[in-house]
Length: 144
Image (cartoon, rainbow, N blue to C red; front, side, top):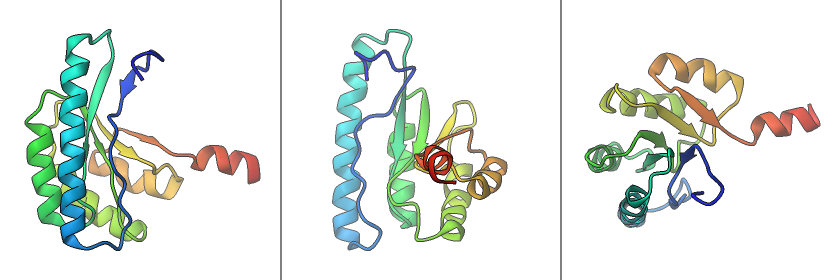
């Protein structure tokens, strides 16, 4: 992402499946945190007018989400991306965002990873999500 000149860099993170054990999910969160800290350290050596967002993980487990929020927001990321498993449906996604968003700093942007359908955007923006990314708009443009 550095070499491509990306405006916003999202560090590598693991996207575990929705239905995994809490123990496996916890290992995934800690592994992602290690990767993100390593990426941030490298990024800060040569910022190049590029932003780096930390990814908040933890599936739908509120305790793991809080752990991830506490750790990632303690680091000097330029913004935050809400990632990992975001629930089994839109209602669970919104419930997750209702938990996560009030706990993130208000002075930096918040990005929702992998979600960009209109119904989700309409419900997520009032909760404080600033930006979105997804293959959904491209897929909808190709196939209607």
